[in-house]
Amino acid sequence: MTYTVAAVVGLVAAVVVDLFVLRTRLVLGRVFWCTYPIIFGFQLLSNGILTGRGVVLYDPAAILGTRLVHAPVEDLVFGFALILTTLSVWTWLPRRSAGSADSTRD
Image: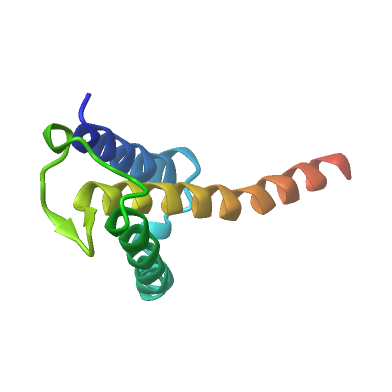
C-alpha cells in the first residue's frame, strides 16, 4: 500500500468516524473550519522542518510527488485525518461520560 492510499483511507475513515460512528459532526461545523487553519499552519511548519532537513524521507514511488513546504501532500491529508479523529473522540468522550452518569442516578 502506498502512502497516498494510506492517507486517503485514513481520511475516509476519519470522516466516517466523525459523521456516523461518534456523530460529533465536526466537519460540518463552522468552528472546526475556522480553527483548522491554525492547526494547518503548525503542521506545515513541523512537516517543513522535518522533511526539509531530511529527518523524514519518503520513497518517491509511494507518494504523488506534490509537496507543500517540503512535505508531500499526503502528509497533510494524513495529518487532517489524525486531527479530526482526535477532536472527534475528545468531543464525544464527555458526552458519553455525561450519559453514563445520568443512567447511574436512576
